[in-house]
Image (tube, rainbow, N blue to C red):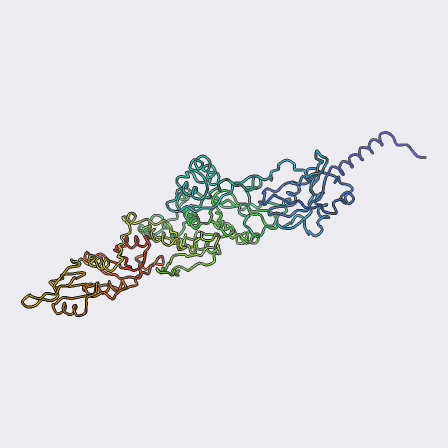
Amino acid sequence: MLRTSTPKHTFLSLCASLLLFSFLCFPIAGAEEKTPPYPPEGSRETKEVAPNPDAAELEEDFPDMDVKMLRTEEYVVKEGDWIAKILKEKGALSDHTLPELLEILRKLNASLHNVNLIRPGEKIVILVKILPSEEGEKTAMPGKRSASAPLKQLKSEVYKVKRGDILSRVVMSRYDLSSKKFITEYIGLFKKCNPSVENPDHILYGKVIRLPLYPPQFDETPDGNHALPDLDKSPRKVAISPPKSIPLQVKTPPAETRAQVKARPKPRKPYVPPPSTKPEHDPASVWNGQEVTLLAAEDLGSIISQMGEEWTQSGEHFIPLKSSGHINLKAESYPIIRLNKGMTVIVDLHSALSNKMAKVIESSWASYRVVCLSTKDDLRSALDKILRAFKYPKIFKKGQPVKLGGDIPVSITGDWIVTPPKTAPGKDPEFIVINLLQTRSHGTPNTIKDYLKPLGVEIIEFPPAEEKEGDVDRKSSLEKAEDPESLIKAVLNLTGQDFSTRLRIPAYASANNDFRFTIEADFYLKIRGKTYIIDLAGLDPEVIALLKDDGISVLSLTKEHEPLTMVSKTLKFLNVKFEPGPHSFSTSPDDTPRNVELTLKGILFYADNGDSVFVTPLNLPSEIGTFLSQKGYKVLVVS
């Protein structure tokens, strides 16, 4: 006999059915829906293509899911993309959980081994939510702008400040804008691109700044895109599966202030050495723990910036790892160097990173290098480690010369000479010379630096050398002789000889003076009671013989056309000692590995007042003429 269910049992059965139905139709969103703590960079623009042919079968394959408001679309993975972000941008995550959508994507993308691991350039099928438009057609739902929606970022170009630069002059020579627009518009744009520059009117020589393009141009970047600012140049980018990422905080020792360092107790020493005669801050001195590390970091930043590379020592740096998670570094302890060729170098000032951690970073990104410094490193050894990590095409050993040919051969030596990679034709130097000076007075003269720069050589000295007193305002003292007459006049004046020009003198006279023969002497001199004639017009040999018989010395330069030969014969005729060339002129008086040596064709002799005179047929640039003047030479250019 069957018993009828009581109302109480019927009510309980109904409640259980409703509860089960609610779990099936409205699943709770899992932790996988959470977005990662770092929004990677990458383009957000996609190109729609024809829907996947299997899109119509979604309802049949997944009868338990409401897929009527979804359609498929082929999508090309961009750098920095991951599945959850793409689905969120396309609106698919608004009504479905990530596990549900991943189940569909695995079926639509059977060729992918792991839908969470996608690479730039791959074509995948993704899901897009659609809504009926006002005309009744189905269009992709744009949705509200999410945290990763595009924002506009001002485009700029890197510029290294040169000696004598004025910001307005540099900007107005590059872009089409008036002085009024420079003040009312451009200064504001410049400050946005260079927040660390407090006063645009006072920018240090050698500093690397960013010049915003004008008229303003913008790039679309993700909102809040403060992470991975340097990965846009990386050749290998792999999207991380964000739901399982675990931030790996690399702990570094807190940076001590100089006051704290000085307050540290010092060990008692049995012997107190006499006061050092070294300068207060010797750039090549050994770092004494944390205090000198802070000083050296500033010195390293100054040198690297003058090389045209970007040195950052503020803010935070995020590095995603291939497998899972990311590394967060504070640039104060781990300065970041971004090279123009796309490489990123992390400088570990306190040697806090282990070798294993450094290998983890370098294995995750081929464009990363880690340089670990220790308290045993001085500025020289620290800079040497960093330069080798740059992987420049060539680094010359200390003292190994670089030689430049041409009319004026140049030999250059330095602490380091590197050949940087080419990034812009005609703009980058062929060689960068880096010298660490013991004193500021032993640097390369600015005149030589200015001469070498157009030849593709950039000289960086630290600390910056000071011009010697009196050299700053000293101008080139070049004297030019463009014809034989002006040449002989210049030589006679320099040697302190009294002379007359085009003077008529008797060459022969009879005994009773009834027959006289006179000639015109081009240059007539009286030296210690003797008569000397320098002939340029071309006296006959018989006339010259008559003059010699009368005790007159004659130098004929009629057939000479080489200026240096004319000078040497004139000096020999006047019994003035001289040194034939070529001659070498060095920027360093001592035999040091930091030197620039110029080889010039010419003759050296001493003037009557003791000054050194250099006679050359070379068309000397004004910089070299000024350099020779600074070294105390009078220069005579003959042609």
